[in-house]
Length: 276
Image (tube, rainbow, N blue to C red; front, side):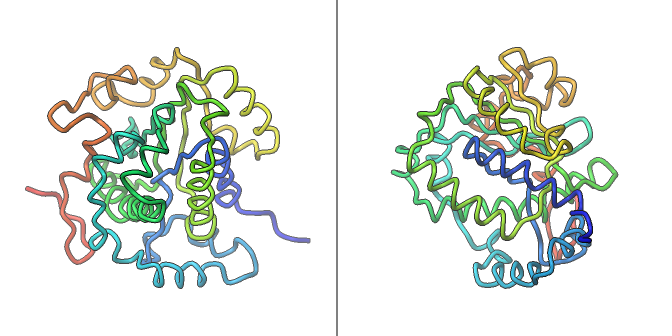
């Protein structure tokens, strides 16, 4: 009899579900060549009987993922943010980094005028690696405990079936392929806000096929979500457009600021040091 699949592998379906419903790519799912930094490495190595881990390492080497943080310059980021508002902002009450997407404001036609699909995918991979090599360690230092999970907020206001155009599907498929093949899941919780009847209909149909543990990590809320978010995130850490007090007005807005403990650290010889 085959051994049961490890829970960390079952948990992968939470991101697959998000990608099926949206173009959400959680930068909270990453892996680093240093095995000591890989979350749940024993579970990853037991995923199946094939040499998945070795294949992933080969992919990282061939793709250049191990140097992508320093070498890839996504110069068009400010323009991309106009058409696809997303990014990391602050931490939750447990000290975990928070990733936010305003999916209802995505303009894929505009996005592809300022960047290419390949460059956008490369940017997302860069963010995956930045989270595990910089954000998680910085949050661990700030919280004085080990942090290897993140929280995600997905704002789906205005999202409808018409939102899933061919370009959107292309982005989804390529990012999902990269994720499935090369990254373990490190999401602690996802909160979907401003979910209308159409979105809830899709979600209710999909969640029946998911592992109960996976479903328990995703909470779908309508437009009265502020109190729930404030249970999870301090008011000073939550953007004002989600009911918090932060605006990052001097940094072009919360989703452009990349605010968090990781802004106050430097990396030297793989050692995390707080800036004095």
